[in-house]
Length: 216
Image: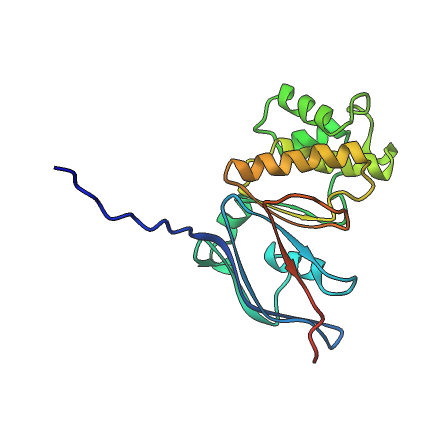
């Protein structure tokens, strides 16, 4: 006798939920009642014209700014109530590199990722294209090289969610390709990436959230 069992419905639970977010800057509404969710394994591009509120949205999602209305939830919990857990699960890279200019590239990675071995930090700097610049003070590096120091963290971070604001700024074509591969690898392992970029990325798995100016 053959038994036919009912198929189980596969339910994908979101990790990050933006719920009816409204953002206003200088008495101008950038976006209104914006809602979306991000699940494990997803890469999401926030798109829109300059001034549409892309960076403002990323800062709200990272917990660095507050929305006028709405809320952000991480694993079902309001961000303000799970801030410590969320920040442990989050890697934020904004417009500024966010690194320490008095330290060398290697010392910066040691500061941010002391739990990684020296060999892992050297390898991350090599992946980021900084061979030969590891022991130079960051203040003596070019803008593109400083950006690479910050991006080297992508090879060391254990955070589930990466929020990246224009990560490809001042990065050459080869560097963009390598960084894109690392993001694809991260999502393939169940991580999440939310980014803004002016670079065209032909990734079939990437979802786009387009911001359009809201009328006040």
